[in-house]
Length: 240
Image (cartoon, rainbow, N blue to C red):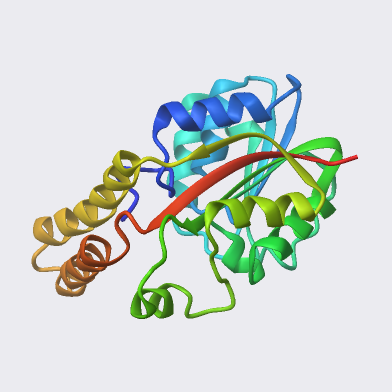
């Protein structure tokens, strides 16, 4: 329900999503693979925009899969979109992908470079990777860094993040740094849709927790990482 008003689970707007997909999909019959697809919104958008592509999304949770499948069927693209519930680390595709997406899902592999290594394993020759990840817009205070880097994934500034990707054997052919407006739209949608659901269902046993979660997330964003945490989406090709 947190993505009800913003199906793309990242701080990028609709025009940016379309532009990134158009840049990545270089052939009319491309096969796409999304590692850590969430509800599968990127692939659903791709299938709508490009009538010849096929797409597979993999995520450890199948939350939202039924809704995406129903929408894909309604749009007439359900036969070209497959959603698989599985740990992305363990997933082995039966075919190589022309485009591999990993948007905000590097944590599932532990960190950024392992996510790129996984993308490379699944990528066809001369394929394209669309990678989205966070970086520090400015140096965070120690408490915020500890809060947002409480697992194996650590963030760097934008130049360092891009340099790590390049040193790993990738060439950026396009990139998009999310604007503050895109972040605000995403965060207000995330917290707002959850709060609206709680207010619309006051008798539901989870409504109180949902309202509290929305408030806590909103506070963490507004009084913590707003303007400090950035998000970059890179369109990458392997460096020869």
